[in-house]
Amino acid sequence: MWPEVIEAMDYAIKHKIRVSELHDAVGKRLAKLLGAESAMVSAGATSAIMLGTAACMTMGDKVNMERLPNTDGVPNEVIILKNHRYLYDRSIKAPGARLVEVETEEDIRAAINNKTAMMFYLLNRPQEQKIELGEYIALAQEFNIPSFCDAVTTVPPISNIFNTLNTGFDLVCYSGGKGLRGPYSAGLLLGRADLISFARLHGSPNHRAYGRSMKVAPEEYLGMLVAVETSLRFDEDAEYERQRNAVDTMAHRLKQVPGLIVETKIPAAEAREPYVEVRWDSDLYKITPAEMKKELREGFPSIEVRALFLSDGELHLTAVMLKPGEPEVVTNRVIEILENNASH
Ligand SMILES: *Cc1c(COP(=O)(O)O)cnc(C)c1O
Image 1 (cartoon, rainbow, N blue to C red):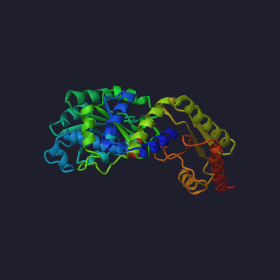
Image 2: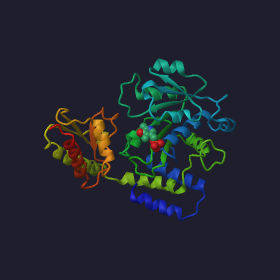
Image 3: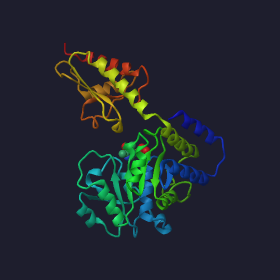
Image 4: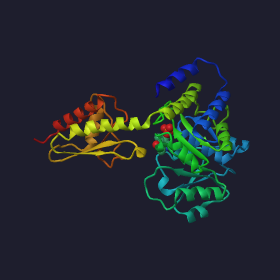
């Protein structure tokens, strides 16, 4: 978390507030800062997905709201592209929605009916798809179906939020505890004012709300606002340079080790996260990348490398979390483990 966020949280716990008034005020300021029609803080991105889906299913109808997750008589179908099914889509289903998988424009036209509550989109998905983002949104608009976008992986930089809101999605969610460096348990739901007001009805502080268990504390609410303010001031270019330098330091050291194939991958700044890919001759070092990952995690200090499912099974060293002096700590441990497993 940014130090500014901790200060704001400390301030918040020392003052009395009416929870709903705080939600109104922070929402208004967030919307203004980010260029959204309306905004709320949620208990993480998945909570934003659940509350947003519930909002689109019930559209403020008190009887239907009370019914969830029972969906008798409640529009409960959510359209999703087949290759946008992902780790977190259970949060769409949590309020009782059913996912309807589609691939093409024809599929979407055929799928839409009076039970369709929402069209979901996962932004930043690398795979090819059979429909363009703009066409997807246009279809949602043509049939007057609220569209929801999970844009979590597009920040930082926070400036991407402006572009995403401009694409025309009705609701967009972000995680607060990842790159925005807000409270770990917070998130953002941005978009259409009516839908945000319905989403708020589904959450705390409302006593009977379906999402009452997804409380956001006043200090988290304010902390999330200050995380956005601080992110908007942050020098992203300098941060990118810092990560590049740390990655270069690691690559430079590892290239001195015999039998290692070391590649520095420097994606464009917009794609973030430079990293070092380290491969080795399996005749020289009898250890797999998975075993290396495990040893790094279990050793001292405990070191975490990128998940193998994100790195195609290779060892990837990133620098986002590294402080000065730590690139050397990482490379020393990698080299130590390799030497312990050398075949000579
Ligand atoms: C991490 C992540 C989420 C979940 O965010 P939380 O704030 O932890 O609920 C949702 N979608 C994507 C794409 C993510 O990467």
